[in-house]
Length: 565
Image 1: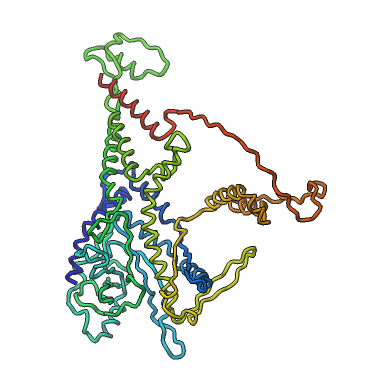
Image 2: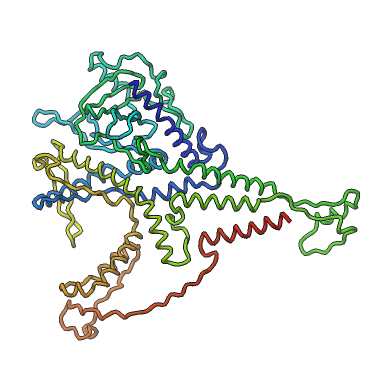
């Protein structure tokens, strides 16, 4: 535990940088972290929302395959029961939280078997009735061996969680007092939870239930797990880890550093530029608030001229004793050059974030469609590596759940196999008796997909694109004696777009069938007409974000020059 305490202290800079970045994300909702002032242009929030939508917005599903032909039907059944199991776990929430943590620091997913207090008795034998779970571990509640420079060489890794005091006492009573008697109280613990970004601190006296913090410390080289109570130097329980390879913990990170076991997160790296943008924005706001218009007149002159000017109305005609002695002056106001620097900072932030405006798709970034496509391809290339990191970890987690399903000694896993053309599928089951041998003997390849949630509109767009591919290869389908069902396609597309097409389709009258005499015959489609399109490129300044920004900055520069004169 001395090493664990030191490692937790070594990880403090990671936690502090993450809290600072989270404070900028929440703005003034944060009490102890981030900027104490207003955040009028929250680029951090924009960055996180766009990237989270692209990386972890859907529920993972698995495709299971094997190189052994005789095992392929069994692999298909495993895919069905595994996907149903994953949907019951609500795994997308844990993945979302872990990826969100990785944006600010690092993400941790813990996979294991849920506890069962009672168990199930079958033929006089008590079996563990726990099902596998995956949950996201907050960085504040995580520790790793920081003295190592390679994740495969660490000596310990663990996390903490709350448990009732009665649960701890029950374990201590079962150890006959041999464990957990260091004498250190919870109040004097060297690893108490730190204050959260909201400013709320852990206080046992304010909690509804009497709970204590516990630590699971996994020792990979010994393959054992030690259970500690917060504040104790000795474990209250030690047991062998009986689970899939790689242990219970998986880390998600995007910018890994050589020789380090923890990554460098993308959001803290952009916080200085975000803060600079908002500093300039607040300065512009203050200058705007100080902007005022006054009436100046020469001392000793007739005050009536000043009063006349003050009470004048638009379009009125007024006489002055000395018009030159009274004039309107505008003081202060937003500095055009400061405005230019603010826009420059926003552009730099978007560029360093990997083309933020391109990824968001909020407005055109190029003057032609081809240039727009190239920009999207470049931006997607930058984010593809981050998506690959997430998929790699999720693949490991999904494979762990497949392992737990495979080694479950009592539970029968069921699912439904879809049948083309039928709404109701065929029930399938995977009993413990058929899961024989080693899980690795079957050489299953498990690939998670569908990490991005698809809306009905997304599916409709994909169907339209797919239909274009079908129409382009119509001759191939005709050669094979098949034809696509245009009516079924249209009805499915209307369903996705929430359109009521009602009696849109009517039967063809016998006299209108174009010579077809047999019911149900489909006439092959005629050749499509060829159209030639001539595209004329017309450059319109200000049609893109870059053009708008350049035009505004040029205007500001001219305004600043005129003010200086």
